Amino acid sequence: MTLLMAEAVDLRLPGRPGAVLDRATLAVGAGEIVALIGESGSGKSLLARAASGFLPQGARIGGALRVCGVAIPDAGPARGWSTLRGRMVAHLFQDARRHLHPALTIARQIAQVAARHGTRADLPEAAIAAALPGALSAGQCQIAALALALATPARLILADEPTAHLDPPAAAAVLARLRARAAQGAGVLLITHDLALGLGAADRVAVIHAGQIVETAPAAGWRPRHPYAAALMRAMPALAPDLGALRPVPGRMPVPGDAGLHACRFAPRCPRAGAVCGTTPPPVRATGPGATVACHDPEAAG
Amino acid sequence: MAERAGPVLLGLIAALALGGAFLGLDPLTTDVGHALAAPSPAHPMGTDHLGRDVLARVIAAARLDLGIAAAASVAAALGGTLAGALAGLAGGRAGRLAARGADLILVFPVYLLALVIVLAMGNGVGAVIVATAVVNLPYFLRIAAAVAAAGRAGPRVDAARMAGMGRAEIVRRVVWPDLWPLILTQGAVTMGWAMLNAAGLSFIGIGVAPPAAEWGIMLAEGARHAAAGAWWVAAAPLGALVATAWACHATAEAIRARMVRA
Image 1 (tube, rainbow over the protein chains, first blue to last red):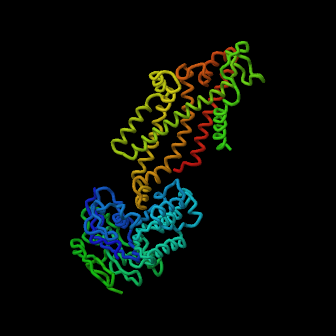
Image 2: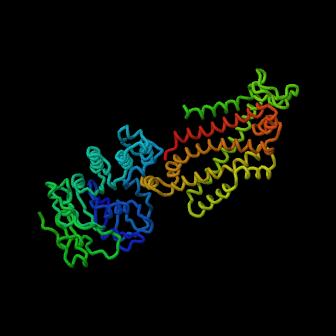
Image 3: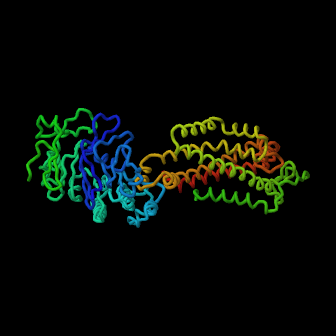
């Protein structure tokens, strides 16, 4: 079952002339972790917020967005967000600490959520469970927020940078818990700016640039076809064979909501760009099983 | 230590106020033959100008003064918190209207407003309680409105909604844990101010009427004899007022330090 289905989603925000998500197409199925990878400001979080109903007032969703089979129009699902939130969808927000209650211990907050859904919650380690959020580090707050989200019976987990403040072992533990939940049939959208993390933790990756999803592919053995995905790969210290091979992505990402962007928003930064890239939206081509690339002139396979 | 001193002292004063009636002290019987007697074993705080035992009167007055302060504080806290929480949750025009209404009370000098209310209602304990409650209510209202408004939007409300909570549950589980420590803190502060306010009204001759034992009345009577050297008549109620006011504020500080999480 497809838990999150975005088909050519255009997202417009009040006061922004352009679409902040431009024909975004992405699916998260049961049992899989999909990493949504992009730079800051590329629209990763907005896609997740659209799926859980936390867009700014006046946001308009074009195309088709479905969460656990329920269509999401601008005004939210027909029977209200309460039918989805907590029961079907959990959202791990960025900046976990601000989303925790400062006056209640972590254990108490988790117990409340578990009680209201009749689930059996796994508490984090005692040092975190017994503490108030103010006494915890940013990373510990993320672990607490994860436990809180997993205390709901939600099948779609929207995890926005869930390991941003964690050391590698703690990050691995968080990813393992997400993986365990996926093994029970949940779908996880793992939002990250870290390509290496996405490749290591996810079954599939989707690369987003300035509100456009440029490439999706299985994570195992992935060879990027889109020039931006390839450039990201060459810009990752963890993936480069040596530091001398590091190549920063040229130019700066355009702001997704601005007016007058190129049809392919990567065109101004792209070494392969031709005249057509500025005027015609790039076609989405299937490049393999579960793999697509949106480019007029993708790089050769292999 | 310092954190405990306030609550302990307040507890002692409250115990004295409640238990004072059983000590067999007589705050009203006059003995003009021993008027303005200096402190002695028979009268540890001396006697006043009618020969009444000052210690007995200070203890008897504790019940009246603390009773007025407690009744006024509880009334102000209940009314202000309820109105403020509703205003904060409603938001928009209703919320602004309630906040401006509270401001309207706040712009008056507290003591002057209380005085006008007592004059309008007529002297008596009830009038003092009502007046004191009214002038202290806006503080609770503003606090409750601010906290409740934070329960309408914001990251923690998003998280609560994401956990599936509806509005009533958000009030109970997000707003209330934030609100009650603040109300309790403000309540303890208000106790101190309410007591000073009640004593102040009696001091100038409105509110509670003589011969009732009340610290403000005792202070007013004692002040007349202090110049003649009978310092103890005024010193005893003054000390009681200062000690109780300090205890209330120290208790509020202790509550804040232990329970209020920003």
